[in-house]
Length: 77
Image 1 (cartoon, rainbow, N blue to C red):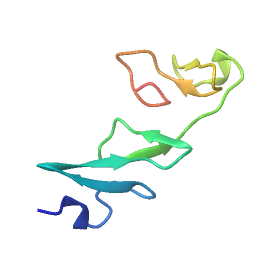
Image 2 (image 1 turned 120 degrees about the vertical axis):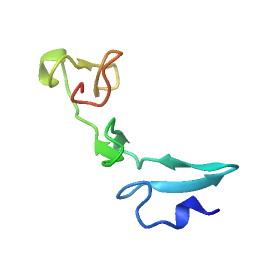
Image 3 (image 1 turned 135 degrees about the vertical axis):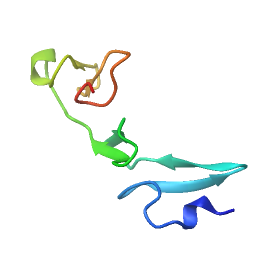
Image 4 (image 1 turned 90 degrees about the horizontal axis):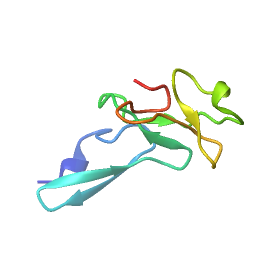
């Protein structure tokens, strides 16, 4: 079965790779996987300090807003 043959299975801009028994989606550069499976990939929020990030996200050394676990995504859902 070619799961990647379904239209937009991985979301806009993402690439789909068939694997044995399933598939893997890779988000394009500048995006990260979203916790909402219907959205797929979302843009990375950039920052200088923690206060630049939404919710309880923190600014990592690469200047990206990331959520501490168990939250996910760059808006800490």
